[in-house]
Image (cartoon, rainbow, N blue to C red; front, side, top):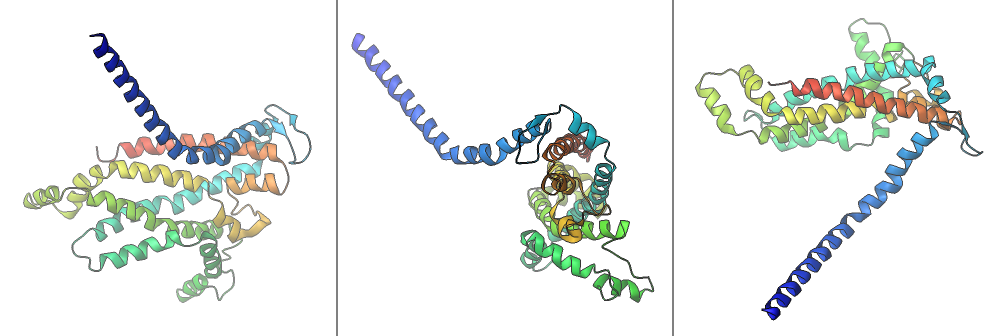
Length: 306
C-alpha cells in the first residue's frame, strides 16, 4: 500500500509539473504581445494620465499644477469647437456608413447579385488604401477652385462654387465623405459575415408565410445581426471621436476652426505649442467622452430588434 501511495503521489506530481510546463509554454507564446502592449500601449496611457496634472514643455522639469490643465482645456473655446466639429463629422460620416453598410451587405448576400467576389473586393478596397493617399485624392476632388471635381458637378446644376477647404460646412462635408468612403466597406464585410451566419431556413419559412422583404429585414435580419451592430457601433464611435489623419491632411497645420477635431486639437497643443499638460488633459477628457457616448450608443443598439 505504501508503494502504491508513493506511486500515486509521484504520478500527481509529474502531471502537475507537465501542466505547469504547458502553462509556462503558453504564457511564453503570448508574452510578446503583452510586453509590446505594456511598452507602447499601457505606459503611454498611464503617462498621459500623469501628464494631465503636470506643466511640461517636453524638455524641462515637470511642475505639478493639479487640475489647472483641465480647467484651462474646459474653458478654451477652441476645444469646444473641436468637440462640436468631431460630433458633427461623426453624425455625417459614421451613422450613414452603418446604415448603408447593412443595405450593401444584404444586397451582396442576395442570390440576385452576380460576381459577388468582385463586388466584395471592390467594396473592401478603400479600407486597405493608405489614409494619406485617400486624403490627398479627396483634397483634389474637393478643391476650392471652379475646376474641382465636386464644384464642376455642382456647376452642372447651377449651384455656386463652394470653398470646401475654408467654409464651415464645406470642410466637415469633405472630411465626412472621406470617412464614409473609407469605412463603409469595412462595416459591410462585417455585416456580410453576420448575414451568412443566419440560417436560410428562417428566410424560407418567412417566404412560405408570405413575408415581404421589409418584414424579413425587420423581424429576421436586424434581430439576428444585433451583436454585430453593437460591435460596429462601438468601434465606429471610437474611431470617429479619434478622427485625426483626414482633417490633418485636408486642412494642414493651419488648424482652422472649421475642421479641427479633438485629437487634432491635442496634437496642436502637444507638438506645436509644446503644452503637454493641457494636451494630456484634453486626451483624458476625450477618453471620458468616448466612454459616455459609446455607452449611450451600445444602450440604444442593444434595443434594436427587440
